[in-house]
Amino acid sequence: MIASVFKRIIRRPFLSLTGLILAGAMCFVLCFLVRYRSEQEAGIREIRDSYQILCTVTDSRGINTQGLRLHRRFIEFVEDEETGIGSYIKDLRVTRELYIQGIIPGEDGPFTEDDLEDVVSWQYDSFGNVTEVIRKAEYVSSPYTILFGLSDPVCSGLTDPAEGGAYSSSMEDFFHCDENICLVPEGDYEKLRGATITFLLSSPYTKDDSTRNEGRAAFTVVGWYKGDGRTLLVPYTCAQRVGYEISSTVSVDSIAFFLKDNTKAEELKETAMKVFTVPEPSSFSSRAGLVVKDNVYRLTMREMEQNIKQIDRLIPVSLALSLLTGLLVGYLAVRGETRTYALMRTLGVGPMRLGVMVLAEQLLLPALGSLVVGLLMKQPEPALIYFGCHFTGCLLAVLRPALAAPTKLLRTQE
Image (tube, rainbow, N blue to C red):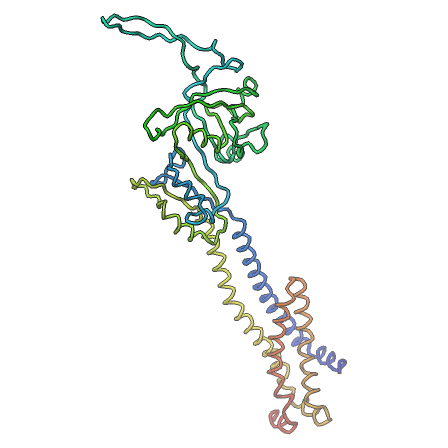
């Protein structure tokens, strides 16, 4: 039977070659669609898991992200995992600023009492006479104006490598320490390395009893940041603690974080509106705004999901065309062969054997083409599905002449 099948294939090379080409082309289309869909699904999973959606707290107009002077309720709401948004976020980045009024000289520090300048003032006696009084200043003018506490190096362009910043510290994990340590500009580090300096600080908030919001705090220089500046960098927890000691207030000047699960962006927005507001350029609200920078993420995901939907519509069409291809090839193969089939039936070839022979003749080359395409494209399953559709189409075309009685086949031929 196998020899007979090969002879019939060789005897009709055009039809056999046509079947092979059609099978290879349709199998390629189906494998390509399935592979492209798999790639889109893998891309969606990768973007969903790896894309970082940055969320930034701004003023109500959405203009400023630094120096916001936010009340403690905002940071408490951000960190609260039960009633706030703490369960939705990761990599929280916060800052706290204090003002530096001056440096208090010390005996062994880089700034001593010898650095104090004379201050001239005038006093009035009971008769209205003016007396000139010369006294020593209480502090030395500071080369730094801002004490900037930050929880992560990316909170400031001074330390963020992505913005050209750099820093070095002898303390491991500097930004998560709770000690009174600081970084100074690179040019001042050699002079101040290891020194402990006492600063006169002030907070933008007054104490509850309206007393002055000033105080002293000593910091040890443990490293430097790139460039020349007038800012002293300290760990955020340190700045928050010192700020509370000065003014009895907890405040933050900037808040930023990333989403923990990108699929819950809408849930985050809905929950965040309990405390925050949607920034509007014309707003005069006292509430802080929250910007969720997910536009690129949403557009990318929407485009990839639309691609998958289009492929889902094309795959059934491809399967239907694959079945029709098998039906067409089978019909062309059996057309005009009814006399041959009738003769074989009269010679004792049973309908089952005849059907197998005809199917083998029509499916041998398409099976080979599907196998090659499936292996080359590394899509064996779609190739097998295609062959199943092609087989079904051929079977429908071959079934009638294979099962019909010889006399009926001859009448059909006539």
